[in-house]
Length: 163
Image (cartoon, rainbow, N blue to C red; front, side, top):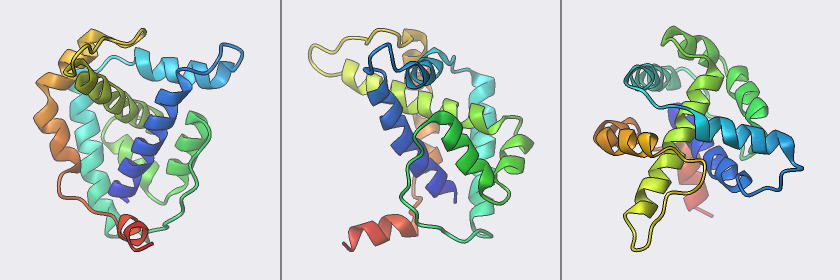
């Protein structure tokens, strides 16, 4: 389940990063993309996120993997989908976060990770709306962030490889 949530985070993070280019008349996705971009990464937040991720990992053994590929269309749907999985909401809350904060934190990490990589490329520039402080935070904590997903594999991912 933990890997499944991380996969959801990756998919939704990419979707949200894409939505940052949506025209202003598409207010809901734009507001969600801005929420992710404006989220301030902190030591305390990373500690809670890490605790929640570790707890979700221990919960995974007790959950049945549901290899559904449905990607939520909005942040609210993403939160509802995560909360509908048995034990996920209470597990995240036990680490001191709401499900929404957990997902937004993860998406923000993904976003600034992509931006940090881009900045390291020749001609890389900080995109509008992305905090350089978040990029610095990501770089300073990259090893700890990388450990969150290291060595984890999802049966759903194996299924995808067999196609």
